[in-house]
Length: 212
Image (cartoon, rainbow, N blue to C red; front, side):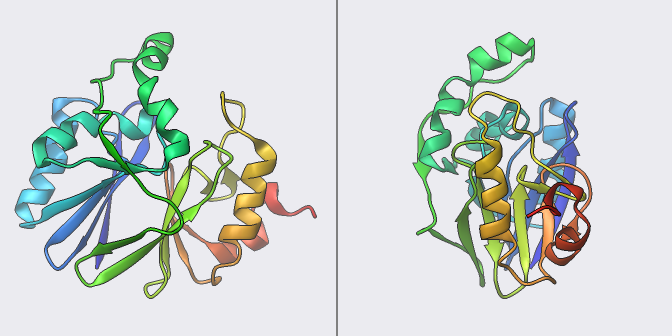
């Protein structure tokens, strides 16, 4: 298994391609122009990968810029939690409010939740429901490899924003402490922005998570 990170768009969002046995899943495609789309395509083609999943950890604009392109290019429906669907269906209005260009994403999606197991080649990924930064936020956890793709829940020395519509600070802290911090300390965290970290490092050092 390999996880490749691309940092795209003006929000410096991390897009991930996870590959196993020449199959791959694209998580949070943030590609927002032809140049960034080409970067993804070239990586997929040069590694002879077949995309079989498109997954959104949540549906804030910077994480769905490339949804339409990936859906059409690889004939994939996005997979997401149903509680984030309103963010997707209102995404064009939100983009207009922010003055951001967005290719309208497909609203034909598949819903996933904590009972969903994502198979990719020889790997299995559990869905962890982690609301707070967004109402339907999810993380993808590979227990065997001790890796988690955390979207915008947990960052190195920081946490996701909760000053946006439909965010909830208490839910976010609960998600981190009662869902993510239950994982093994060695678990590597692939964040939606910035550097990777580990669960153990954040338990000890994250200034937002040291009280109570």
